[in-house]
Image 1: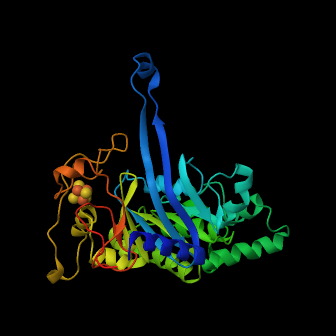
Image 2: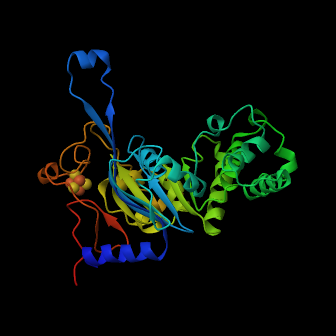
Image 3: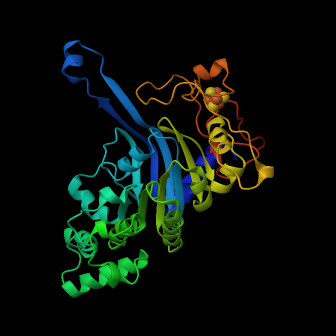
Length: 350
Ligand code: SF4
């Protein structure tokens, strides 16, 4: 498929059912210089946290944004929900542009896009019982006036989040719950608003391995019920197992994206290949040699010119220092699988 045809197809699919469409999103912010830096007239530095990111999430789809710490995936999520300002690009939710709405105009939308964080210990108020925590969003949005109806909503959300029987948990405080139960409370507090899109920022990274699968299965179930899920994770194996599509981020950009299975089994970008090479395999016949990336770790204040991955890329060429590759369709991969590398040619044929 030509690039123009692919772009047209992407637009059609978005018009047909994308819940969230993010296009060329940019979020930069200045690094404080401090008094000394200002007195010494040190140059102002800018963190290019999100630097031209495009992706979409459909209803009933789980998309995983994968990358190392500092690659910009969490800032991307925060920009999508307008916690962080964007300096460019567009954010369309349910067919409407939300990138330039005022806080007042955004208020009703906040019900429809909910976010859960990696640390359930931090995200719950220790003075609130489970009931208070889950009821609070309904009160804030003035949704259900009658107390009995609110209680019913709280019970329903708890059951959907796997806190069953609700009577066992509803009067407990966060310190009386396990890590997995706390994360379920956070999820129930999101579900009580019946959102269309759930953003899960490293939802299991702070949890014991034994309870991770349960939380991930819960998110998977919500996706199957029709909710869009954007999962932020550094764990490619989790993404491969649960997501429909994977977008791999490096220094503020998506460098590869496509159907999860194809990205993992047939990675194209050297960065994705390196990430996959260090994922443990169960089958000894499938073992790959771990490829340890060398060079400077990513610094979004000093983004290298040309291909931003070139200082660490094991197959970089001289021209990589000058050419900034775009995401494009490739030969020999599944439909919708794209990567940004000048060594990867466009698809042949018409
Ligand atoms: Fe590596 Fe060059 Fe491809 Fe960038 S463009 S990923 S540096 S080969």
